[in-house]
Image 1 (tube, rainbow, N blue to C red):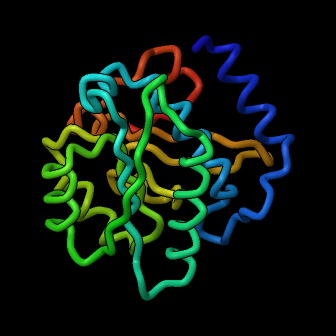
Image 2 (image 1 turned 180 degrees about the vertical axis):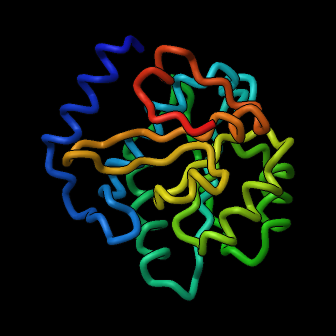
Length: 191
């Protein structure tokens, strides 16, 4: 996908009403939009095809006791399923109730998860998960943009009412995520 195509998508996504999905105080951007942007961003990961094989498995990690997290999980699942594919590969979405960082890592390794999405978590939990994912081959993202500075690879925030991608480059390298340079030029890169 060319830079122009990606930027056109971002512009149209900003101008297109997101439907029922809404942003919350912690997410900044509508969940549907974050799923679309994650799908597009994942296509820029040079290691996605090797990681995924013939199927992109997306694992949604949620906190069952937090209604906002459950709602975000439901919206992400619907949005990813509407996408239907990532980088030309079919996708499958599954969920995991957050109990511990070690449970998340076990699920990622056991199931060959390609993309891990945090729907909510305290900053300390996000940091523990990111630390535990070091050495795992997975693209992590969070609907909470603050989690990127705590070690999640990808997140999105609003800047002047437009989506802005955030990439934790050091963590990306630890998780075998290799974004193309043309993608990184479009993102806010944390080192």
